[in-house]
Structures are given as structure tokens and as C-alpha cells.
Image (cartoon, rainbow, N blue to C red; front, side, top):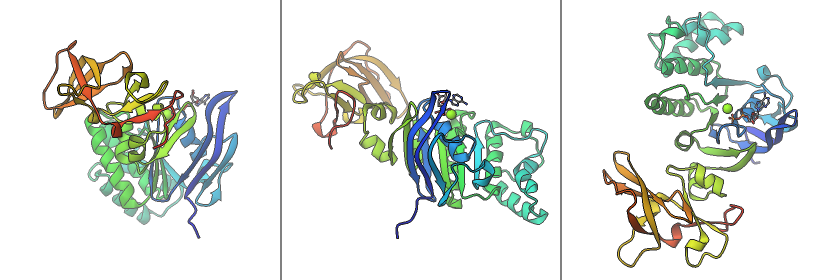
Length: 339
Ligand code: ADP
Ligand code: MG
């Protein structure tokens, strides 16, 4: 017998007075996995999450959680917890009171509340902060309180909508690791909304990349990076984004195709090895490496990675080379051709 996926969205659609939220959203999520809903602002990530949570009702399609059809179930009947970008903490309650609020509402006995609280505060590194009010915490600590509250809820499914967006870059990286560790330790299933491809790539077992209300590609971070199904995915995943070259600029790639090429596969050509001649447009020093942006009439996003601090003069002409095996071929409509 094959195991049922833990969460199923089957051809789900949501519109408001004809305005598209999402359409044809079909997705299966394994229990215990970390799934990222990724895409630019307005592509339907939150709508998908809210449909799953029961905060919105689908116009079409079905939603199943743990084998149960919850398409029309109330949010409170779906056995899940949520973490939002805004934290949604009660400002007048202490950290401890915020964390156990839901347990109190559900009349969980005091001793059990205390035990769950302690565990959640330990896991989130908040021991010692029990009596502080949210206003006396940093953004990162507030987000930890929101996480602790989701943990004490003890649900097997946790939905997170851009939970790190309000944190500064450094904190984002550390809380990102905390969340991932937590998900693995607790063995819970997380559906995580983000517009940040780095976050999705570093955290998710599976990425669902969306655009304009539709799923473009579902796969592991490696799948999306190595085999982008179309030029949208190619340019959205990876930093720097994949360069796209018109096939006319290269020999042997026919007419009207677009050829994708990642920066790590481009090198400066030695005498007589030049495949394209470009002009240096910018140098971006990142510490361990310098990204050299290149301009070419028939290409966008061409970049070379050079080690350490090695800028090049803007306007300088350079010859580049690359191997055919590293090229991604897309048709005129932007869809990946075989391989
Ligand atoms: P994301 O979270 O990916 O930024 P959303 O899921 O919030 O995007 O929104 C997807 C689309 O649905 C957007 O065009 C948005 O304007 C629209 N939308 C979302 N919620 C509503 C609503 N309550 N009423 C009307 N349109 C909405
Ligand atoms: Mg959103």
C-alpha cells in the first residue's frame, strides 16, 4: 500500500470578484517535510497558505490534511498552527502568557501547560524571558515567542508566512537555522512562504515556485537550480540569476532559442578560445569573490565569478568561454527543451 501524502491540494482556485488569487494549484506534501512556497510578491503564496489554513475558502478544488477532506472545514478544525510575519503577539501579555494562551483557552491543565511552556522556551532559547512583555524584546526574540507558541500547540502541521521578513539580515540567517533545526527535531511538517530564494533554497526539502497565481515548478532545491523548467524559474532561482543568451549569438543552437548559463560555468577565454565578446559593466566585491557583470547585445545577466578582490575596469572588452554541457536550452516560449 502506498502511503497517502499528508497534505493534498487538488486543483485549487481562489478569486475575488474575478481577480485571480490562485488557479490550478495541485500539490502533495509528505509528512515531516519542509516545503517552501516561493515566488515574487503577489504570485499567490499567502493565498495558498491561507486556503490551507482555512482563513480563505477555495472556489474550486479540494484540500486534504491527514487523509481528511477539510475543503470547507473551519480553521479551528484543521489541526495546524501558524506563524505570521507580524508575530501577532498580545502586547499586554508576558512571553509566558503569550506562549500558553491557546492552551489556556483549550483548558489544558496548569501542570501540563507549565511543562509544555518550559520545553518550548528551552527549544527557542527564551528561558529567562518568561516575564517580559513583547515590547521589551528584540524582533528576533518576538519571532521566537511566536515560534514557541506554535510549538506548544503541538500540531503536526505548521504554516509560516514570511516569518523572518521583519528581521535584519544577520538575524534572519540565524533564525532560519533555528527553524529548520526545530522542524527536524519535532518531526513536524512545515509549509513556509517566502519571496526570498536563498531562504527557500537553504531550508526546504521541496520548493514550490509560483508566478501569477500558478505553480511553475515543484522540486528539490537542486532540481530547480539544475533543471529549471522554464526561463522564469531559471532567472528566479540562484544568485546571481542564470544568464540568458539568444541562440543566434552562438553557433549550433538554431534560431529563436534562449540559452541559459550560470555564472560558475563561465570563464575568461584564453587566446583563440573566445565564444562571446562582452563588455564589463560592473564589479561587485562580495568578500570571498568578485562578481563581474558583463554586457552583450544578445544576452542578459552574464556574470563571471573571480576569486577574492579582483575588480575589472568598466567598459573593458573581455572574451568568455563555457562548455556546451553547462548550457540550458529553452524554446522561444521559454520552456526547457529535453535534457
Ligand atoms: P503573495 O503572498 O505571493 O505576495 P497573495 O497570495 O497575497 O500574494 O496575493 C495573490 C493575488 O491575490 C494578488 O494579486 C492579490 O492582490 C490578490 N489578493 C489577495 N488577497 C486578496 C483579497 N482579500 N481580495 C482581493 N484580492 C486579493
Ligand atoms: Mg504574502
